[in-house]
Image 1 (cartoon, rainbow, N blue to C red):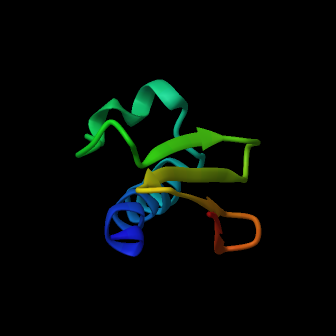
Image 2: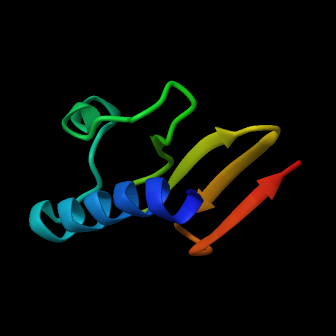
Length: 74
């Protein structure tokens, strides 16, 4: 689930970045529909970094684009 839901959003962001040469702003993410109110959610941190986060059960998952890795908190 984590890679599936979050992976689709990461792919969307990376394709947007290649096409537009910038990361999307939060309001531009309305084109990407979240399947669930628990996420995934996008947050632009800087001009070159972002996070994706969502909750699955009792776990909270965060993708850090700078580190290119998923972190989870039980």
